Image (tube, rainbow, N blue to C red; front, top):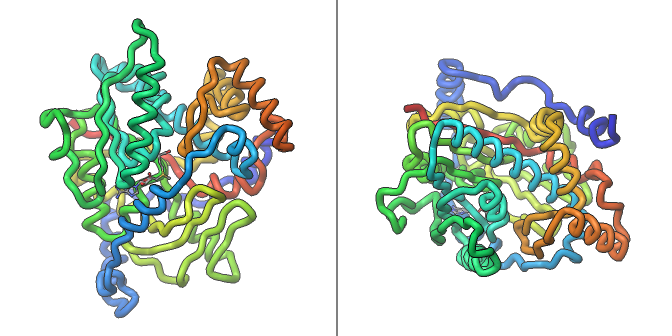
Length: 384
Ligand SMILES: C[S@@+](CC[C@H](N)C(=O)[O-])C[C@H]1O[C@@H](n2cnc3c(N)ncnc32)[C@H](O)[C@@H]1O
């Protein structure tokens, strides 16, 4: 057993709070709603709802592109690679399912695409069309330039998907109205590390969900990654202050003990990457709301569980070895593209030596693991 596996096993999630279903969920939601309504001034519905969209956009717009060398010096280098591996596996498996269902032309919506950290994953997946949308205009521009560059560098016999880039607050605006092809339907909507920004209010969470699901074909998938509210609250309750974290991340709440369904804000700061208010996503409510769009939850798994399951597969394991060595994909904050895995490995060795960090095949530090194990993976499928 590897050092990494041992560490991750010790991080097993507790309980099955996330497994509420059907009536139980309804009851829980109604109970929470009533409690929230009774809860005088603490209720976010009675508080003035501030617009965080502006803050989110300006934060992401300000994020600098940094090169590979700088990234390899980052204390979250391995965590970022791990997250990229996890997204690659998720995307790859969902694309397999879409193809098994017999879909020839695959269209994808990347909701909250950022600077295009997943573009190469879509190319490797051989999709046909991609719509990238994000609230941060600068990120969308960088995403488009990255795509243009990819197109410029691809060989004439190489297939590259067509793409459209949209700057929009997807928790406020109706995305399909902005599509070049007004009739376009998607096989997949991918919403990676984004959905929690919309849980500021019911209207926003619903609009984001509508944008994600309304244009999905029957049988289509809504996939994503988001922090697990139970895990956040568990760690907060275990802390003797209003925050918890370590040298790579910090989560701070304004109070504890009562957690409104919407607008339950916390501040997540992750070294160099995210330092912006987010909102708890009460998953049973998310699942309940998704039913409005005919969506059925097919998978909800903490990163730790997902990792343990997927790493058993030889292909996923070797991709992990490659990706933990060095990002073969440009990640969220930019980067160069290595030509093949040996170059990537050699480049990683060199960068790590120069930067004085652990060898590339070293695994996540405990601090990185504590940060990434907050997240969960979800997959919804549209019922026909
Ligand atoms: C942590 S980044 C993730 C980027 C990308 N999905 C990835 O995995 O690399 C979160 C992204 O969500 C975007 N975002 C947040 N709120 C949004 C909204 N209301 N509409 C569209 N994009 C939003 C941010 O601008 C940012 O690019």
